[in-house]
Image (cartoon, rainbow, N blue to C red):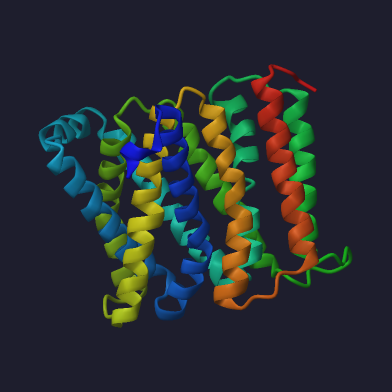
Amino acid sequence: MVYLLGNQETKALFYGLAAVLCWSTVATAFKIALRELDTFQLVFFANLTAASLLLSIISVRGDFSRALIVFKTHWRLTLIAGVLNPVIYYLILFQAYELLPAQVAMSINYTWAIVLSFMAVFFLGQRLVLADGIAALVCYSGVFIIATGGQLHSFSQAGLKGLGLALFSTIIWAGYWTLSIADKREPVIGLALNFMIALPLTAGICAVFSGFSLAFNGLIAATYIGVVEMAIAFLLWSVALNLSTNASRVSNLIFLSPFISLVLISQVLGEEISSSTFLGLILIIAGLVYQQKAHSQGSGT
């Protein structure tokens, strides 16, 4: 099918859109999975399926020996990255999804890019420009509207604990991507190593705080999240960026994801999408688009 799409840029957009469609399903998938599994089980079994798939891919490519060499050279980086993602990030994110409506947790999760821009100042020496501050103000205004349900005196829609976890997960994810910017490992090998080194940690956490017994539906749900959210979407996105001669064109596709997610959350989970969620999400996406355009044009305003 790919060969019928035409030029390389069209293929890049095809892979990018496929990745976006994968990511659009995960908020709904998280909620469904958490009906069958607790947070600790879901993190472990999703980690297991993602690691198995990624290990199979690098083995089929003939890169297993190369992966071992990369691990010996970069084991410290692998350990830190693996602890951040999948261990800490998904433990926090799944707990947020347990406590919040899917539409709230999903919307807040998109603010990680704002956190990344501030982390890059402190850890990578990048310059903070006015556009970053304006984008942050717009995005977090959206978060406030979503969290309060449009009632400025009350956090009626999102509990404080769930909201705190959702916001904290964006810090962890931004930290992971800050680390990834300086990561010289080949992306697929790097991700596979991260998930492999995380397995003993997620297994131990699951053993201590939960258990390994689960129903068939729970296994299917965890497998879907491990394969689609943690592995396939990343691989599709990497292919899209590698094929494209205009990375910003592909990157813009990501802004479709939250709105597709809202449709799925409404139709599959049966959540009524509130006007405050929609307005807040519009502000979050507007802030991100403004920040991206300002940086691409080299403007600080």
